[in-house]
Image (spheres, rainbow, N blue to C red):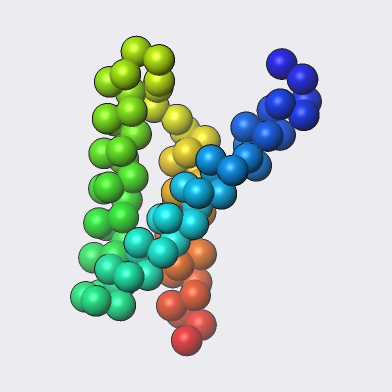
Length: 83
């Protein structure tokens, strides 16, 4: 695999979507209830999504996706702490 392909896998559109969705989901749940529920619900949904993906024989649990999800949650926490 070429370096450009590896970087695309690390910083590609898929990872940006995982980051963005987790960030926004965490913020929405946190603002509707509390920060702890936002973090836990988002993390649970992210793990569940990856587990469902791994049921497909052409797919697998992606630690890269989970990293992007967790970074989205962390940015959400930092944003909530700043307001």
